[in-house]
Length: 427
Ligand code: GDP
Ligand code: IMO
Ligand code: MG
Image (cartoon, rainbow, N blue to C red; front, side, top):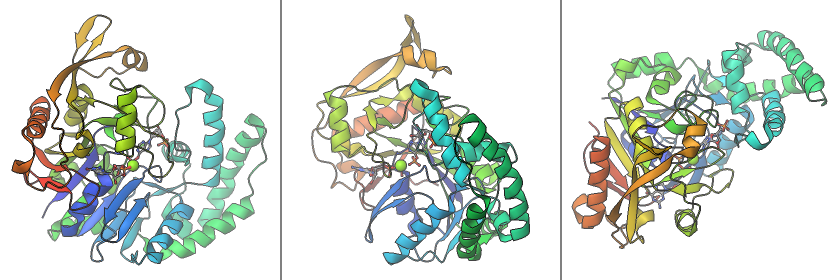
């Protein structure tokens, strides 16, 4: 059985949680490999409605092992709270395993991110303020603390003393604020360690053995490729790679062992936080898509900007991830539209271009060039077979396949597990 990566192909919130929950029925293991609690994955299934931030979306199947991989940064307080709220609703977290190599979000990450975003003024990134950027920066600077470190109190204490001294220097001298207390942090994080210790393990070996045993493993993407720190709208990006390449590193699985990569695209596009978005609709139509599609942050409640499907950006994210198939979600949110537009190229300073520019200044200047497709103006949320979709909806899907040169595996027409239309098996 294979390893399948499910990757966000736009600016996040494509419906990855729904897709994983739906696919996890047959999976042995589900792994989160990037980001942290900046993710908000909404699941609607027979157990109710859930918003997951750190726990993989396979948690609803009691026999499925859920792994938080080495590539994730973990706020232990958030994780413990999430586990306990799942437990209260009857969902067991016994099968949750946490990589001992995953870096930890510390109180100074949250504090410093607040000051940094404020200091950026008009250029603020609009981060989720969960300390994600500062935690990944420390990981790369080799001053992070990892889950495994918490299990060795003496080592944890030594490391915290030296790192906190450096952080408190910044907090007091740069931002003129009160230093953080070593004793308080040490005590709190030792408590977290006690709660989480039974779950902390080496995870890449577990995955290696599972692959050898022929298990079905799902790699659950967080964020989206247009937020990637290399290829996204930098600096309006996140701090870990949400891409298929990131899945390999963040789970600890060699790239040749990933058998399929499914790109998740909404039938239109959304973005939350600051940064350019060429097909953004700043009008009534954008507002209608937001309201109808309930396009508000899963955790933060921030309104998401909505726009037409951007095939220029989509082409790039397909190319970078090497998608073997596509999932088109929220197609039902286009049900009422008489005409649907797809951006097929950009105009930049009077020239037509077919690539996604690297710089913010260019992206802010591009004007989308659209083609139009008639809408279907029927409720498709109850349809379960591809052939039963209205002719115009099929035309839209086939046009997306043509533009991206990639087959669609399935289409999502509602938030629930069952609201899925299969077109082509993933493998
Ligand atoms: P994720 O971060 O990629 O998991 O996506 P989010 O959960 O943040 O946002 C997707 C939202 O759309 C959630 O509220 C889902 O319940 C909902 N959703 C997912 N797929 C569909 C769909 O096909 N149709 C509709 N109407 N809603 C969907
Ligand atoms: P899921 O997994 C949508 C955005 C933030 C901000 C930028 C940087 O639910 O798709 P960060 O806190 O990561 O430093 O913020 O990235 N962002 C997301 N947008 N969905 C997400 O996750 C996101 N995670 C981060 O809004 O613009
Ligand atoms: Mg989300």
